[in-house]
Length: 513
Ligand code: NAD
Image (tube, rainbow, N blue to C red; front, top):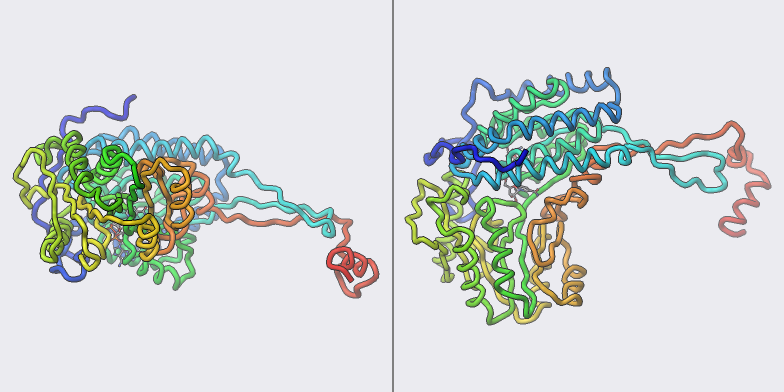
């Protein structure tokens, strides 16, 4: 069955007024605005209950032992079935949370990629689970050494709001493939999706196997403080630091999937038209609310005006309309809308040249939270949009005189989650890939690496640590336990006191006299 079917209505309820709640999303220098919070007091988890859920899962894991290959396949099958059968509910719930979320963006980014991840895991699980034989130095022969793949136990996943299903389910696939039990905490900014996830998981897995806990940041904070066997957090760099501190109290290993500013660099002579299409398609997907969205553009001096024209053409052909277009996603809530407007006001106040692309010249009201893609030409470093991750449809466009200058700019900033290069010159491409460090890189496209299950996905430095997807995700949630088996007859006695001539001979052979 096609993943893309007409659900009738992809637009959820209008959501204009934010409910006061906790959490400050305003960047430094702008007014503090509060995001809405989960308003489900009847169903939200209490921070005090989380420890009991973990204890039940631990006890169940001990009782059931390590799930075998067939059991894990069954878990993956069940997850795939519920994702596919509830795909229209997922489209609706996310549209409710966003106000407007493109149905196709949901089906591609939340369902299709997760299903592909499951299919990839299923196809390779047997080989991933296999015990790996390792080399034994001759003096320890006939010992045998191998690495046993063992589930870590009970692992935690904290997800953000921007892809609320994918970023909860993607890590879940890896954790289940690796044989773990899993606790998931969705974002409080997408309560409808969080509730749907909870229902789907409750219907599919035993409560001591996979559990979704919902609630505000107090629940997230209690979750991060649990003595889990691993914690995978996806979210902002700011909260990532809080998570790592909380996890450190229990020495819980963490994978941090964070954000940052991912550059798009255009090489000399590369088609501005092709680059504009790729960059604007990636930037406008989910209205720029993607950790991997191109955050700013670096292009050769003298090309900015022509690039702007190509961006206008690209946007007009993809999005002839913005407001009356259910395929163009809204900004998640009033707080984030105000944050993005704050970046634009700040850029304008500091003398920036703003180019708003509004093909049908529609009236963009704050109530609808549809934001026109806006280019900011020659941004100054002190502007907020050059200091903070943008996470919306705003694109600063900077020019460079030499490629070295562009690379120095990238390298002077925290390591990005991704770097996008648009260049047909192999030598320059090689130089850029070698001289920059980023979570990932794409050449002549953007964001595509996320959809490739066989590539490790994760940041580096400020954009995160560790990785998941495919085998790398399996490894993240697996204890690779080295095991040595010694034979009854062996040369071990040579290595015990009192040391004798045989050892002296062996040492001479190995390290000289
Ligand atoms: P966020 O950091 O505000 O929140 C993420 C999660 O952390 C939420 O579930 C929230 O409940 C929880 N949280 C918030 N405060 C907490 C606290 N004090 N203690 C414990 N948990 C807390 O991020 P967000 O606004 O939901 O998502 C946007 C950010 O996520 C952006 O920076 C984006 O780049 C990043 N992101 C990264 C990836 C990736 O794969 N690297 C993917 C998507 C989003």
